[in-house]
Amino acid sequence: MKPLLERGCRQMLLEGPTTPAEAALLAVLAPLGRIYGGLMALRRWVYAQGLLPQVTPSVPLISVGNLLAGGTGKTPLVSYLVDLLQRHGYRIAVLSRGYGATGLRRDSVRLVCAGNGPLLTAEQAGDEPYLLARRHPAAVVVSAPRRSAGLRCALAQGPIDLVLLDDGFQHLALRRDLDLVLLDARRPLATGRVLPAGLLREAPAALRHADLLLLTRCPLPLPSLALLPERPQVRFGQQLASHMQDLAGICRPLHDCREGRVVAFAGIAAPEDFFAALRQQGIKPAATLALADHSRYDRGQLERIRALAAGADWLLTTEKDAVKLRATDFDRPCYAVPLELVCYDEALLAAPLLALAEAGRHPAGC
Image (cartoon, rainbow, N blue to C red; front, side, top):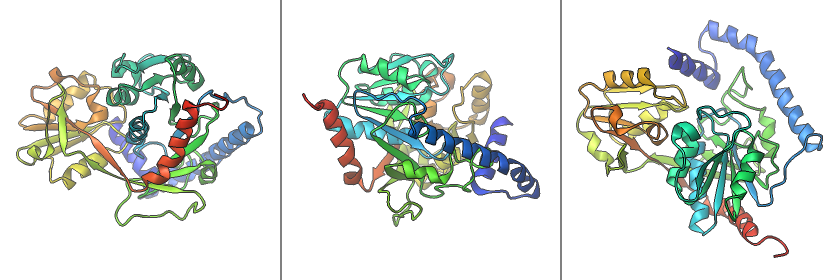
């Protein structure tokens, strides 16, 4: 019931009210949204005036963040950036707040990866930092609600050329060299309202502080948003990979699932996007189960999936969900389907990133 309510509430905030009751609820929430938006704008101003301290890292730092609360494809995008920078030989650190990690206190710092693969479980690290550590074992990944403490931990792991601040647009306590802000090209500002009356973390005017806008889930022909034409826009498409991987690490072609009964489940911000992507690949799930974002997969959740999977030939889920599951959780193989990004403007994106990474490798005066 709770995931259903969460999805229904998110849909209302994303697309607007569809019933008189929803319209009445939003009328009550609208003043709260304006107050929250004003407080967030004031907070930015206070930092800009130097009235609250900012830590200046000793290496270049790039923030990757959202204006919308969840569902823009940030984790695959951060993974894409790590891969881009590592292909050019740079050593990268990723700072995450570790959302969903068990027992992570405000002053906790957890080294998820020191450059030799994951050191913690997904439950200890948070599913997104663990997934990044598994995809990029040579990177340094740290989970820390206080990102300045996480930065100290990351830099203690040896020379770092560049730091990526995951989900950092509103985290102003660290000074950044570049602000990358993700927007879903299909509905970049949702209804334009700020939490709790909408899904925006800040008013749209905050986009003036972005250096690059990263448009995700771009349809073809490629769009160009007019909301901030003076900011460069880098466009991304996304698709499911042509392969899938079971929980023991065995790969096989995704098209194998076109035959037989498929059950799909996902605990991400927009599970329907995953199910739609499967259908685009010619895979038609007989049943789907949309769970709350960052689902923990306790006994009750696993029982729901097992009941739904009775008689299924294939169980499919996302990589983000799979890192919290074990091969012994089900009596049939469960496969994770990776998400792949396609960047249509990579030169525009790569130029400032590589310049900063090179500056980090060769500091001024060295």
